[in-house]
Length: 543
Image 1 (cartoon, rainbow, N blue to C red):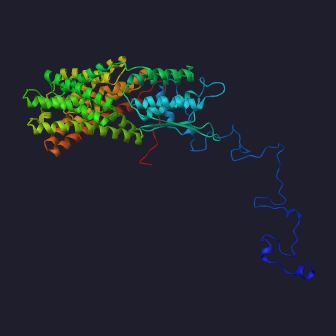
Image 2 (image 1 turned 90 degrees about the vertical axis):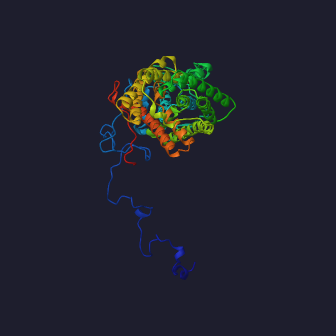
Image 3 (image 1 turned 90 degrees about the horizontal axis):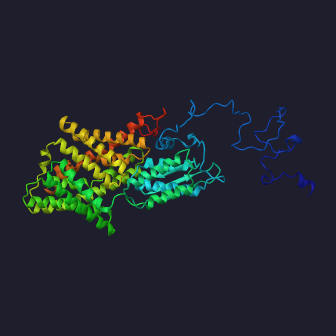
């Protein structure tokens, strides 16, 4: 390069923006690249004598001391330490922890069931899903199913678990730590059946797993679960058919029927039960099973009217409806909605609606033909029901007993639920007939006592509350309001019929809300060895 070319200024492309201008000398101290975080010259920083490895965002700060640290940083008052009392039933302990954030849940104190090499996470999750499937298929509420699933995982040391329950799908996720990949599993509930004996056995298994003194391995838990599935129902088919007939007969006595009405309602319900079993064996959906089962009681009532037999035909039809009304699914649906499981609650209530529509279709078809044939059915017969306390109390207890048999309950619980049903009807009769309260208010109070008693018995036996509450609400089901609403519609009195059906829906909601309220009252004010209460979901004015 010549001297002239060397003095020639360089182009902008050949020079960086950070190149020092010509004529400015740069010292050796700034020859290296610096940043705005570099220390000024002349400032001496004491260096640590110990050589520490390069840290990260999760490294404890250099000036941090565990002994001098405050108990919590957020919120300002600190996060209270949660210590769960072992004397409480596992349902209450697990519900409390499920409503806590994961970071606030107390870690398991001991893990006696964990093998030396660690828990088999996939097998624990599979066992948890199978237990949750049996509970959900048996009609248990979503919150109780999640509590049971969490209890099983926690008993094997998997404390960072998140169960999730919907109407037909169970899923659970376990994250060992913040840096490990989570493990998830799911299971679909395709069949639902009512067997409270199996439900009680599952509760006993979860209770044994949650007991810190027990040492149940995975193999033993799987064995007990397989034995539950193999066990047959406690009552044979002919007993169930007879129970459905006696239930309908007892319900007909509640609404003013006599001996002939009792027998007619019993025969109609038994015939409807057999037809429903026949449809189920042919693979027809439950909607058509309810439709077919509702026809024989209505047909017998219409036939008695056409033959001019001096009986109360409305009681025959009403008694048949009592055996079909889906009170169990209704209570479970409302309970899920009140506890925040809105998807499951919507699905359950939609199922109840389909069952109810099936009953409506079956009864309306028979009533329509009966009215056209000249049957004299009186829609105002509901106003002429005279109270017969002793007969009605006995009928309510018989209704609860037979309902318990249909639910496949354990024989040890039948007596308690029978007495509970009798008490519920006594309270309802005292408020409605003697105190002249509205039927909705009387039903809600009676159902609340049923729920309270059911929770007390469940806590006493560390079992599910369903066997003590579901059958006891049988005498309170709105069978007569449903029938008279359908009869008015069949006679072209649509407005009057819709009012009666709205009354039936109000009574059904009063039953469901009353049962749930009684259960919640028992949890709020009954304390067993602990001053703690279950945390509620943090929802305030929709936030």
